[in-house]
Length: 301
Image (cartoon, rainbow, N blue to C red; front, side, top):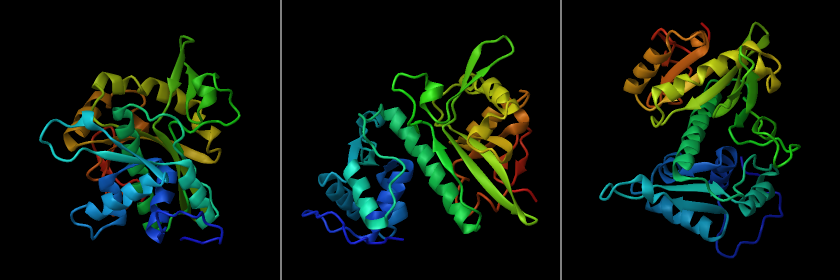
């Protein structure tokens, strides 16, 4: 809900609307969104996308957001170049002026490489879909950490596991240091018999660009991290953890499960196709596959 606090910025080039504030709130949560996602979520009656693009151009012209065309991701004649957007500091100030809340994430550094932007935007859409589903089920609020959320107290040249909130350093059986760095870490709080049961969810958003070997190499560090209950650094009340692989297709899902089914970390793994991962299905249908290839619901029966 937008709350005008009475001291909003004077912007000669744009009159802010409730919809604009809602877009800024989502960008302040996930940082990166592409134009089709913004159109789908905030301009549902805009069939051509022109009204969406016009509004985003106006916001970018006023330095409320920053927009990027990722030309390298398309071949000739594939259609419109994808455009991605992130919140800028001025947009964050506007958001605070209208709502009294500061955004969690603001774009301040140089933009990353195109494939990194696409990956972060995909993880951001995963977060938004999950939160839509959580609210539809009236479940308690979740807390989210994204891959590059920083520990503000860490020095700029500190090791990654000190610099970033969910980058962990674990020791394997030979004494070698291994890194665990999920794309996101969140809580799922489930009311049960007058109390709240908390599950920690580590997220791996897969665009299909990594080999199966690269994916399976993540499992041993995850197994060590789980055994040491490293997730309790963020969620001290979490009873269990699941590592959730969000995959681009059912075919990819089947291949990844086959590659991981015999690994010692298999019991904590869950797999879901992005096409199935929609707000109306996340909690209500058995779209989550375990390492045996069995479809499950995410909530206990």
